[in-house]
Image (cartoon, rainbow, N blue to C red; front, side, top):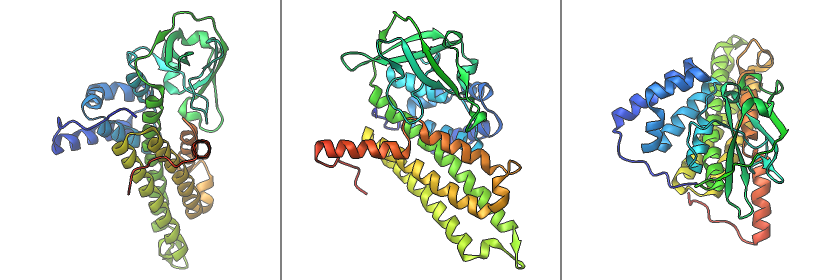
Length: 325
């Protein structure tokens, strides 16, 4: 991950105001409306001077509200040195991490998020023969994006599988490895946002639901599930702190895996606490269960990331250096 030291350009009061503004915008708006609000707030300016604060504030708030925005494309383009107003990035398919343009540069297989549906241009990425990333653009209509209505319809996911003739490729200034690392950290923050909301919903239910003349929050089994959920959230958050401090692709991958695994723990325990109501669409839990499962797959799931890191360890015959606790 690129060097993302915080600049001392914002004092604590300004940071609190900024975080509050982002949180309010993400809780009341989504999609293009959220992007417009972020522009008014000056989120991109804050990203330039305080990337950790800007990224964590937005993506956690976005996850807590189950919203969408074009921020992930913005992060990827900024790391790669591509103008951020170029278009919506075609992302790798769920579970994958490689640039989605395959073969000789005309076979495209990837996915787009909600912003793809309101963008005119898409940014396509491929790996050149020398290992560097190259990029070009294509009209979104030419990609024939197909909506995916399965796991999380509200995310606006589209599938892109098409063959194109594209010649005007340019070399990106930044590293794809760094772009993936930052994307993993950002999605990790979004997962933490979904986890915190799931725990809040379960806790509220536990305090209100009465059995045997007492709130179920007083039952030891329920308290254990809520406590284990909180531990999973704080562990994921600590892993993200480590990724920002260490800024290595390995630590970013481990943080993303920790967030994905933590989300699985929180989903399981909160579903159990909410019991039958948690299985219905009348309750909000299903929205966060769906979104967290989708986010886990972006830029590698907890399972695929740990499998990849394990294979690399076996190939090298040595453990990677990790941030000391």
